[in-house]
Length: 587
Image 1 (cartoon, rainbow, N blue to C red):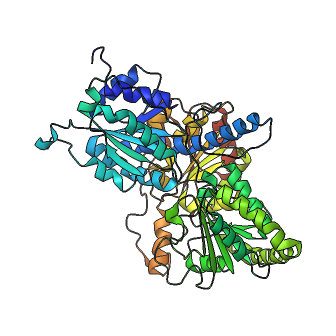
Image 2 (cartoon, helix red, strand yellow):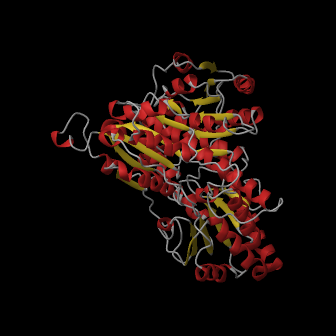
Image 3 (tube, helix red, strand yellow):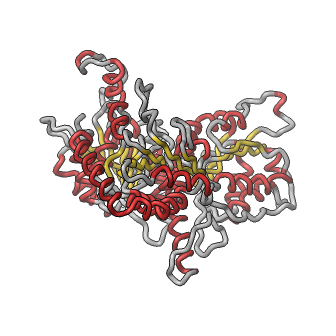
């Protein structure tokens, strides 16, 4: 490319100026100018052997770095105030020890972007702040419809907050700055920019634009907050708080505000259907349960005079439900930093678009005296009654007492917790997830799962999470809890982990079938297991997962004896690099 300064050089310089340290991707010809510029930079390129693997790694990296940014922000605020906590005001790139959580992934033209759409969908539902780019044909060549052509902007648009193309090198600084700002501004999520080959090769004297401050979603409409307090203040009516992952994404302060609100209001607390982060401490006295995607159970748990939906998005069943999940007469208060989620599936009697932490903290202040000690005691008695009613039913889920030499999912989770109680867990265990959530009281920012539900996200995300965790001063052990069906989507992910010497332990609850599809068959079609053929749902013969992992450069081990799980996990955690433990479990 010579000594000239090009759009590709400007692109890479902007990434470095914005605090990016890693670029994930799978390269192609239209990306070669960017690859050449990356070679002259201080950025690390993390190679994925498939574009969807690269997107998943970047998403897991971004979700984990968002937690690190929250910690750095809280530490910076405390240090500026002599150890006292001060109010958060969004992401400040100029703050001491600031952490930019954005993950950057570079894909290859139309088929490469198409390959990455599965995990781009997962990143969008997870709210992962990503800047996704892809090379494109030169702008003056596309009329010939060259090989690999396609409408990249339209393709990415459904799963991106903003999708566009840089058509001239002079627009590159502004569009890159805008991309980072859109990805980081609540509700966070991925953006997409197409980078034509001629734009990346064009000479320029432009320089990166400063990123500027990134706001949070603010305090919310005072009128709506006052209305919500009025609706929730009558102690004769019970209150259920349903926390969603928008709470965890707003930081530990928001989780603490949810606790403050629950205590002030005397509310019972549930996690939304398909909760995938730690939005409330499950060891708290007012915690009742996660809401399962069963319409009868969900409707029973959502049966309250007043329901507060805070940061929710996936709070509905897997398939069509025949009955209302929330009764028509129930008063609903919605709190979210995403206006789309407010009143989406139930009417909002009070609608608060705000940072969930700020809004819940203000509601707690308004309700504390109005509910009063006696009113809270009355409500807490009802909380205890609901806890007793649901405890037996809810704890049955995910636990099978079958006479089988293989471990149960509960046995596996108990062994993991004993071996690594403080590990950071990235979960795509699917049918084993409920055992994990009900048996392990995670701390905030200790657990993240696949919010989108599409398989093939969790294993790449666990590699990205481990790369992010290694950047901290005190890295935690990272456990990828990945079902066998999920693992087999993208086993080549382990090549990236081995290539970059990523310290990661992947534990596979292996029942050698797509158990979720069998369960859903019984739910949809009825009958017993013997009544169905379960076409395409068994791995027979099974894949040799340890050998597969070793073929990609990781260590692999088959664990058949339940009594050996804990020691196998402890040994893997003591080693550096990637380990894959294939643990046989029964259904």
